[in-house]
Image 1 (tube, rainbow, N blue to C red):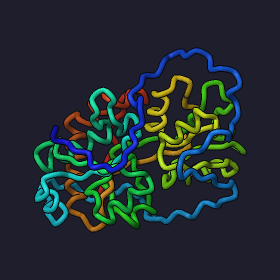
Image 2 (cartoon, rainbow, N blue to C red):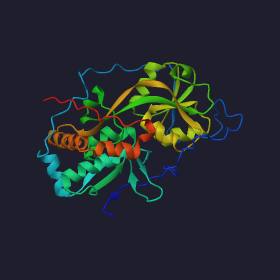
Image 3 (cartoon, rainbow, N blue to C red):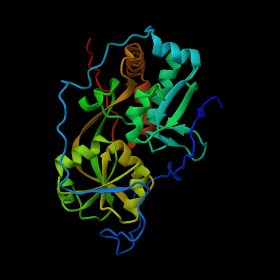
Length: 320
């Protein structure tokens, strides 16, 4: 196998590719409400509802990116080609987007295949990738330190993040929603007042929940797999983040369901180190190709059909 995963001490979450039953048997009685009798995940932290949301900087349209150039060259691209491999930051706990297939042991998913298409255009072979497993809170620093060449990890494009890293054009638009146990009285964000909600540290989901439902008590954890565990163990009442991630969690437990309307949209971009304009242009050329040649649609139908009918790819927004 030409792909290599460079991970130290990685704990693999089992059953990432499990199917979701259409009509599960009733959950045993007595599972309403939360409990604290079981230990919380390592580095879990409960935030009080009084924590204020910091004001967001204004950069205009954060999704605007540099025009594509499939022939772009420069230091960042030269380093990748000299190395002969593209180093990609992602995770293995976001079923549908990036996860380890328990049958093959390979890392797969929508984000993974987007990164492989970039490697195809840059190095001539989609398998010439190395993976660095990152938490959501580690994404920006990994780019700033050049630990990775790109981040393909459900990374929302925001003005605040643009102060630290650069982005490709938008390649997917997710919607933040709420995940609960079937039969819960929570039907929307309005029902989360005074309830415990699990959200991963370092995500835009946390900021939006503070805006939409400031009276919710938020438990922050390092990974979405941790959120799945604490929801199953009744230590929180709900999980809230992008529908792409929540659908992956729900696919692992037939007793879980997504509820309520969207709390807001999340435009995903490929994260790239600031100052690597040529790499931004090259990645945008790959995204332009996969939008036009049917690859994007094929990837959606392969991984994300559970979200609904196949949409058109996001329209890119370019700036000079």
